[in-house]
Length: 342
Image 1 (spheres, rainbow, N blue to C red):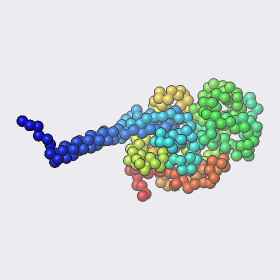
Image 2 (cartoon, rainbow, N blue to C red):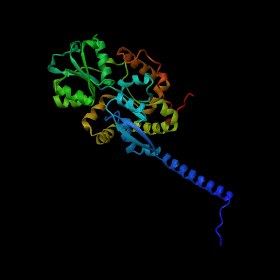
Image 3 (cartoon, rainbow, N blue to C red):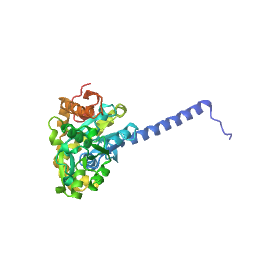
């Protein structure tokens, strides 16, 4: 029997079936990838910047939302903002010293993590520095764009010292700790747990605390935040809500189980439990429903705008920007079932 060549109709039908099969395969792949969506999240290796992420993974909160989270370690805000701008990071923990990036339009604030009480300016006790006025002409190590820089700015302002009247040395966190311990700088502006590590190395009795957050409360609230970009929110609004659902569960678990959080965070970050436990005492922890209320009643906006006033003084911002331009609590509110203004 002769082989019969397929007709034009049969060829068309075969091509159509092939296309449909290919489309079907593509849809299955997309659906499968959608079952476990990848998020790249920047964290800091401490109880603020890692605790919630560790709990959300350990307790299965991310899994419940169909999320796979790749955690990327950072020690300060500026590199995180660069990574988010380039698209390498989706969501990040951000300390209060880098909030000016939000006012500049570089990121949007999703949630308040906590209120920090552990930032401080410290000096060697035998340095001759007894108070803030004695900082004139001294070498001060501080990582720029961090809460350390913010607390230093407030301290200098209170002492009526201009930044040019002291010798500010921009250092990364590890470098600042090492330089202070080695007595290459007179003063350092850092936060728990790094100040705790300094006290451990040089002896707590050999350090004098010149200023800390408590000195400037209630005029200022020292907020830590979780942030993302406008681009991410527009492209992945549902993903943002899923993340915040897992986030709120982990945040509330942390609130009620701080000792367990210390243990799990220590295992993940390799930070000593003792240092992390110091953060428990130097932090005002917040339940998720309280955070949502602060956004809804205007408290959060007032806190962030007060912080902006510090950034204006230090030249980071030209003026105070209305917080509504960079606060994006909608995913948080939706995650908690709160009404969202459209």
